[in-house]
Length: 219
Image (cartoon, rainbow, N blue to C red; front, side, top):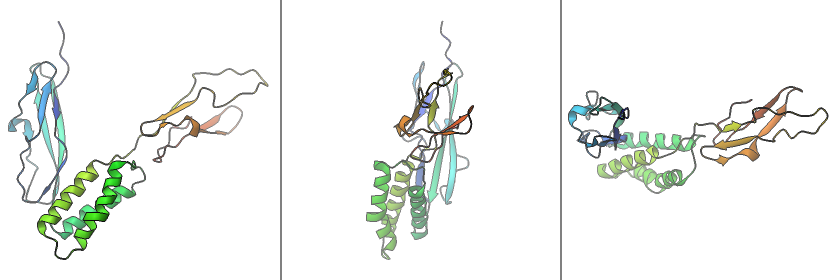
């Protein structure tokens, strides 16, 4: 017989931004599935929302917990951010968005381009409009935070792969890059970007930096 050691999987518990005073159903869009038990219906007993205050601006963490029939448990945290639907709240959201764009580890892709366009075409004009409706401000804040949450920040350094050992005949020419490879989770193959600095006859420093300023461990 097989031993079930696999916990259930909770899906849909994505971070969420809400306007202060909103209603919130922590089970909406959240599902659970187990490799043995199949689909599992979540109830409010599976969610801990004691720290959440929908009437107070701030960032809150709620948690989901589920145990399957063979006592395998999964715990998932979800961040709920409560913001005010006024110019102050919009200014905060704009500042956070611009800080994200200035992050040197931001991966430039369609999401970052979408944020730049939204700031220029929609968010900043709404902030500058003295007659902007509360509903407009609310919509912009939510859209801004949603776009920012989809940005990719690359904090993972490249991986250098070296031969386990190399033997060289005295006096024979030797290519220091022979057998070296480098790969990055975002930039892909970076082998051609490896740099080698000779420090003495017995040691060399192999250095590599990816396009998001993450440095591989020197060897």
